[in-house]
Image (cartoon, rainbow, N blue to C red; front, top):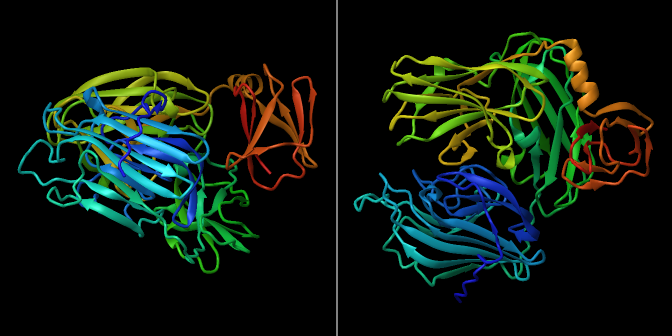
Length: 556
């Protein structure tokens, strides 16, 4: 029965939605049973859906409206999946949870994407999760538009349905058919019920994380690195034992330079384990790939057992090129239909450094036009591009691929991330180069009014950052010893932290899943804090003061 619930007066507005992007995660507020597992967070996609586990873009085009589909993203509630556009001056999303058993997410007056400047189309709909009976309800308010991009003869593309974490199980209510008796309309309510009883049992271990956000990262030659993995029991059966594997290959030859296996014990449904592999010190600079996988008897979902990371190793010198490009000879060129869109690359340099310049590969393959290049700080929402640090522009008229450079005047990088962005000034160009050779770093982003992970995760943007990793010894000593905390000593399960300028003597410790760890005792001696983690499990811990000013990663 249709019963619209208006949460706009008290719900939380979702910020940062544009045309084709994803924001989140947001808390559900409780554990909601979905298929054979439980979920507690969600991402909002601007195209009318949420995912419980992915920040990848979903698009209805070229078969994307087929539900379920193993094509990423998965773990979806597609309430009204179509080409929606939040860049047209209207359209909002709100969410509300009572923190116990109900979550509501409402899309209000969202227009469709149309050719040109047409802003016709308006869609209002919501989803409701109810933990009391494990139901999922979709409700539809006023509807205007049929997702045909403003062309009456164009075939519509939209979908309604749900799918699980693998994309192999789901239910489709509607796909692309405006004449279907299931066509969405104002006053429609759809409710998905779980089976009254089920004997469905699943053994499923997931390789959950091998680097922050499973993105590529840089290492320095002859300096050590400790590989780790976070494993989740995504099934509904306990696992008595399993093995975690780590392999590192040097590219392009594929030569194996590192192998390690760790035998682990039991893990219950919904639990996380952190696995700590033996350390690795790369002796040769170049391109590497880290591959980690988990194995247990009877695992029924092998698709989520393995993760890859793109890991370039660089020399410590005064002129270092940072990029995730594997083969520019295989680069493709792409552009947006309309000016103002763009691409970006997230960089986390491997140490304190000076940023000399950044480079973007462009060509006027389709159309000549202005190109705008930026270096951003990561102080935007959720660590996305924020403050513009440096910028320049070019008129790109040559169809020959070239590097276009932004001088960043030896900008001093200390911590966090830096972003390099290119904004397309022409209607159909200049074209941006993307590398299609694996492995992929997942550090490429797109801009369509808001920043989001690039919709094609199997590419890397042809963007470079040139840095000086040989800043003066005095400057590095000041950076490490005065402005940053560090582990001063580590013995017998006790950690001695040096916390200069700490305004608070309250410390919080989290494991890799975000769970708070409570040390037996914290003893302060001036700016040194002595923590006893002797009884904590092996793994990776994040230690920070209450103010959040300092943060240290500790591996036990």
